[in-house]
Length: 335
Image (cartoon, rainbow, N blue to C red; front, side, top):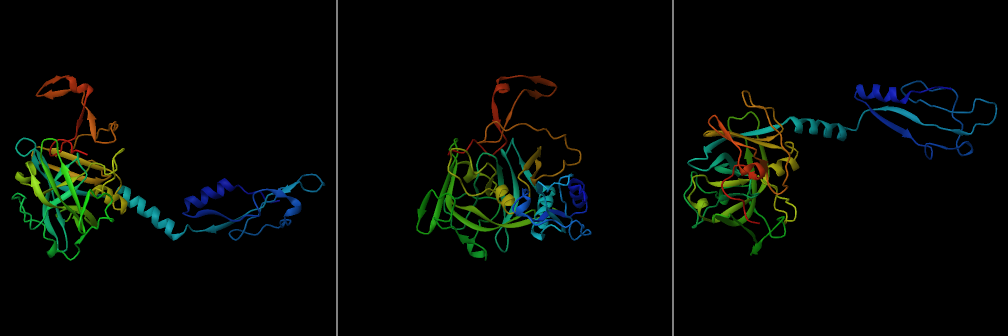
């Protein structure tokens, strides 16, 4: 009788990068001996087949036989590729430089490009909304911003999103799915949904990505959105909030769905500069240690404020029992 240590074999195969797959099942792991053919008492050399047979030590007929075969196989290529993708996704990240300040502008923005050939836009990084939008050509109710408006006729990869194609369509006007986002302080932007290629990190960054992405083509802006210097907005709040209708994926969600990065992002702001990073990335050199806190409200990114320090003086206020939204361009967006 040949004794097989399956655990040791599995561990050895795992360390060698090989899969451990039973290649033969005889009607289950255990059946009466009468239903099974007697296994050969002569073991077949590795790596072709290993056979284990259990029988009674006495001369009486065996009570049962456990028989299985082990074969040396490499993991399927699709599985190996998936593991490689997951490893690359976990370590991959995309980074964008931020400009702006909270005192004079009240926001930070990133430079991104849309279309083929690319058209450049400055987008406010907003953690209170989930829509990404830029002003479009022909908009008579849009303000004057840093860059020219997005011109669909100049992009070979532009296309409208049909009303039944968008995840959520507030209203349908002809063949266009419209949207409107309003803020509590009175600002708003509205237009129709479109799809084009979004380019991220296509500057001095070492890594970049281009992906098809659904965004808002604004035809009207009011309040701060009309008077701001930045061209548009990039919403990073979840598009799948509990008890709310789902929206089209955000930039981060689209990157995750297409396997570019892991489901994480970080904001680092300091004075008039900063950095937005998509994916799991190591802390920047010289940066303060990363601090983790639980997300207590699934609808918004929030932090629990325990104290406020001004100069060398720290004070505890009512904020110790409140939650504050992360820096964004304004108040939380209305549902």
